[in-house]
Image (cartoon, rainbow, N blue to C red; front, side):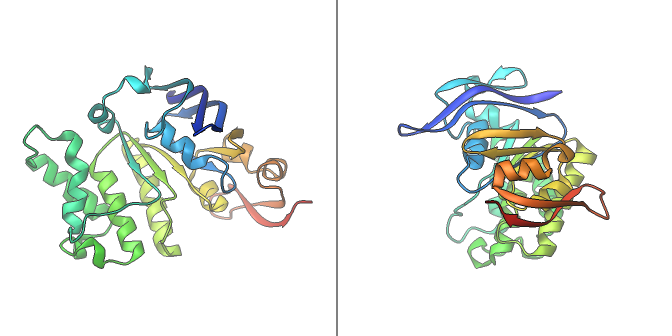
Length: 261
């Protein structure tokens, strides 16, 4: 049931403890979203789960195997990551950047196979970049560049996709397009999606599982209905929230809130 789990992990920046005694189990073939206030450790947790950050104590398991035992290329065949900020090489085209996602599947000579080209085509089509695939990335808008990075992650064709604030720079229409795409990948191809989002209602609408954090600790993890409660949002965000139901999905949404006192 769980492909990814963390057992009492501790993460430090210099001597400051950011995550302490953190326990986490992420359901397989689900969309799991980490939410919480700024500085609570959301991105730190995501980076730790993808081996970008080291943990000083505890254990993280991926498919029952200790995360640190995986070689980099082996891990990249299992999980893809869209980080919060990205820098593309100067003058690189959209297609060339998306092709980087095929690196974990290439041999020693780095030659793109027909299968690689098919995966690149599929990723570009899925993210609606066909019309600009030969444009340089540095000539694109912020929203377009974000879709290019999503396409790179998709081209990697892993069972697990991690995304850190994937809707950044996207307008409302493109936010929905991206979230619908992730939902489609989850439902039709059984991809496990794990992401950090700021927008509570967007997270609630598209998630199967939510993880709420504050001060480096998990406050509540569970279904959307278990996490999107007045009491939990008070504890996590220090707000007095009014919870209703989305008329389309019937899931809980935050209708209004006041700052808690």
